[in-house]
Amino acid sequence: MGGKLNRRTLLVGLMAGLVAASFAAMPAAAEKTQSETRTETRAFAPGGSLHLTMRTGDVRILKGDTNQIRVRYTSESERSDFADRVTLRFDVRGKDATIDFHMPSHGDVAVEVEVPAQTDLRVNLTVGDVTVRGVEGNKDLEVHVGDIEVEPITQAGYRRLEASTHVGGITTAEYVRVRGWIGNSVKSNGTGTYRVHVRTRIGDIAFD
Image (cartoon, rainbow, N blue to C red; front, side, top):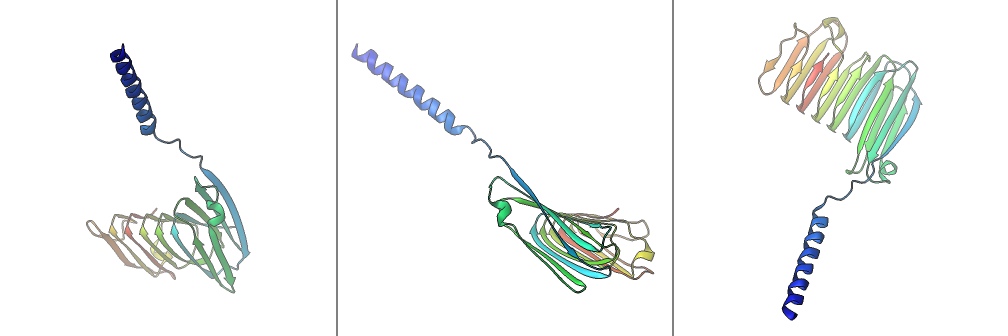
């Protein structure tokens, strides 16, 4: 009788251990993603210059219909306090505007900026994608890891065009010669007014 009880106790213990192990191996339920969108606007005349800096996230810069800069950014994270820890420094001094984002590492931020149709742009982004649409002016766009997309540019639309990627490709008009294999670069002179300087270390560049 004692042997049966011992075996039964052993089996119960083994079963309990297997059940506990199976629960421990199960992935924890994913926390619900928190999303919050905020908007800030400043008056800004055409012909000015905007400098945007950001560590990680995607940036879209679009032509607006007013003499304003409108910044709309969406924060997403599994942590409820992430949005409150995203800080935006948004200053306008005369014809110079500065947008500077700082954020923790446990979330994502997507930024959309509307500017007057004629605005010089300078963007510095560590990780993420940059898209520019409909904005006329000088462009200095730099990303360490990510893609850059700009609307097609004709020779009449720029004075000097330079684009480069260490690892990636460049898509541009047929008349512009792309040099390189793993890394690509473009240098072209046009008949227009503006300077376009676009570079990423790892990523693709597209003028389309």
